[in-house]
Amino acid sequence: MKEPNTTKKSVDYFRLPRLLWRKLKKCLPKNKSKRTKRGGRPRASDRAVINGIWYVLWTGCQWKAVHKDWFGVSSSVIHERFQRWRAMGIFEKLMKKMVEHYAKESGLEWKWQAMDSKSCAAPLGGEKSGKNPTDRGKLGAKIHLLVDEKDAPLSVVLTGANRHDKMAAMDVIVSMMVKRPVHKEQHLCADKAYDALRT
Image (cartoon, rainbow, N blue to C red; front, side):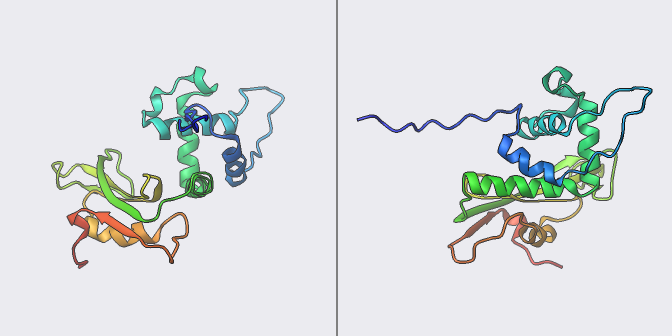
């Protein structure tokens, strides 16, 4: 008797799945710019740009580490488009679509969830940065993440590095990108920083 194939499908870090791309492109702004008769460089396609963003999200590499040959578009264009979409609030919609796609294709495991935060430097500042008490008061931010049992992200919240975890806990739980099932048994793991009364 032939044994079932238990090997996991490998992830293509360089190419967003076609089915997911079809969902994401509906959220992107329409390109209204017309090329003039003078010529000029054509606008980089959103498909190539989102493949570059997909690569950075999967690998965690720096934007400038993305080679132009990989996607046919420079790392500066990929980063600029990412920042523009984020400022327009589009990236939150894209992340929601990605989580919904994952939930449909792989299924979310709701029995156990985990929540934690990570401090990172933010030397250029920004409205969501603050003085980091653990890094000599330098400007920093804190990324709060809630994941399911298989480490799929359910919620991401950014705060200043000076904001205590207990103050962000409710925001992290409330801003889940998919609807939480109410009929299933669920547990939440978090460190002691979240186990405190809000003041």
